[in-house]
Image 1 (cartoon, each protein chain N blue to C red):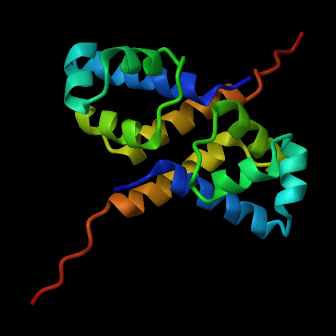
Image 2 (image 1 turned 180 degrees about the vertical axis):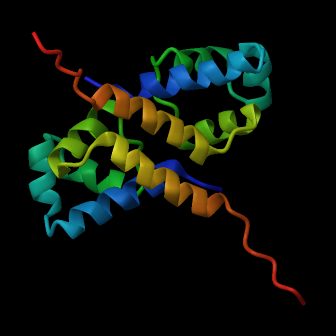
Image 3 (image 1 turned 45 degrees about the vertical axis):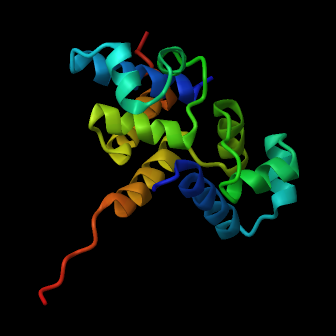
Length: 86
Length: 86
């Protein structure tokens, strides 16, 4: 089953890592607790709309761009594996 | 401020209405309560990942397609108004 919060969390972590930033830095910029951000990144907690926007702001990414990337990842998971000829 | 759950809820309502279906029909197919679906559509409640997937299934739309449309709507809201020459 595709779990959106896991795809979203994974993408948020990827963006943060690509920027070489720590959970502490981004959580502080986003004014969310470090524990909350960590749980969101691990797909253990649904991010509220307000906090997701705040995290996007802290990462300097547009919410729409994040959603586009997440839509791509979800699409890959939805696509059935290619059947190989026997 | 852009509130993702409002954009998402509005799009879910639009899809349901375009199919000429009732809250009762879709909530029953998705196995969510009518009240919950109604709150989600009005942007009053965050849909959990599991229930969002279930609602998509009931509406016969792919989660990735829903996310793409929502990303477009969010992008429109992010775009600053065009400045007109005085």
